[in-house]
Image 1 (cartoon, rainbow, N blue to C red):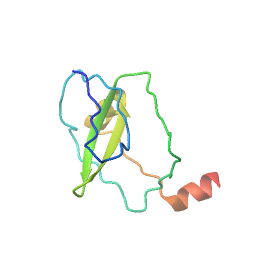
Image 2 (cartoon, helix red, strand yellow; image 1 turned 30 degrees about the vertical axis):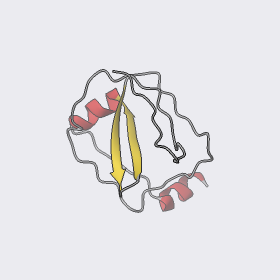
Image 3 (tube, rainbow, N blue to C red; image 1 turned 45 degrees about the horizontal axis):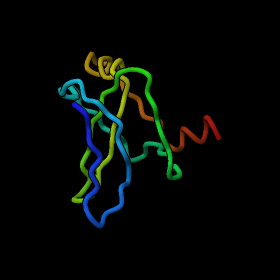
Image 4 (cartoon, helix red, strand yellow; image 1 turned 90 degrees about the horizontal axis):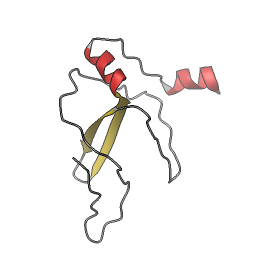
Length: 98
């Protein structure tokens, strides 16, 4: 199934998808992300290209916003099997990398 990029009239696109969906399923396990999780704010044009099958979860935020959680299919399989989840906080990130 191919995904079409459709932008409503008088709206500006915030992203485009180049995606062909093989099938649908469930995440299989809850993921909680701490409000202290480190984020990076990227310039327009930021891209990620995967060279393996991926899993995408579209997250609605309020009435007009969305976010994408994307991972390699292998990561999703590990998640479902109970692998430990870890989130780096900004404090930890600064200590390790800055």
